[in-house]
Image (cartoon, rainbow, N blue to C red; front, side, top):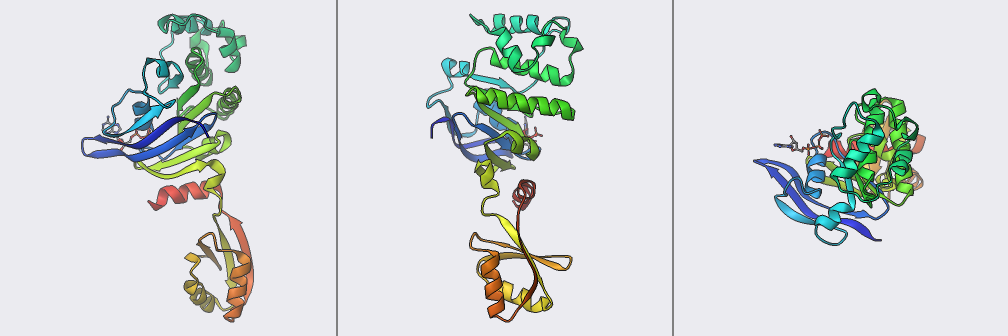
Length: 297
Ligand code: ATP
């Protein structure tokens, strides 16, 4: 798999605060990669380092297999904050200003405005735009230099459900053009709905990285109960594949290694004289899993 970005042991200290701790990640080309973590987990710090705005304390990273030099910078479009557009100018005029500042030779205004679904409002003044439209214009301005990678920090912050849905669709459309998208977000649902890959970080530490489905793979729990509750608990404690037993109402919720499964559990319990009156294998939802990942460390 080709990677557009390799991050190796990246750390950042703000005085005595370690905001990022030896982060290593590879971002596959063509992926929609979510950097997911609760507030203060180090997402913005990571993006700022990757964009050369902040200097890391330790570690390194390489874009497109090399340094983040002038050429590499031109291949990356980023929005860490909404840019300052001119309120009395139209979207079109504002993009013309951006193109002049960036000295772009052949800016494709119509194409990017189409991509962010602002073409029919291109002549309206920026000040008449909704927050979602302003956000989409910001993305259009980052797309003007035809980047191979687009970086977005919390792209749906403050938007209503309709605005959120529009941004999500737009990210999918952008990805469909082969542009790699890197999104920082504290919202699992945002990442779950649009990302192909995810890295979960908390307090600067990487908890998981890989395909979105991998977050739930081999994970789950089994709910069971028996008339002989104490006997059931005792036997469960002796099984090596069981790592956790929680009491949820009348049920026991059992989780453990990938070896744990309902059939084998049932058989082993029966062999030890414990008979079940309820047995159900459940998958952990991504949300549960994210909460579990971020809570546990
Ligand atoms: P949020 O979602 O709230 O933006 P985040 O995941 O982007 O959070 P960062 O903003 O990167 O996290 O912050 C990571 C840690 O570094 C936090 O503890 C934060 O308080 C701290 N931090 C960030 N910037 C600075 C700074 N300039 N000086 C000191 N500490 C900072």
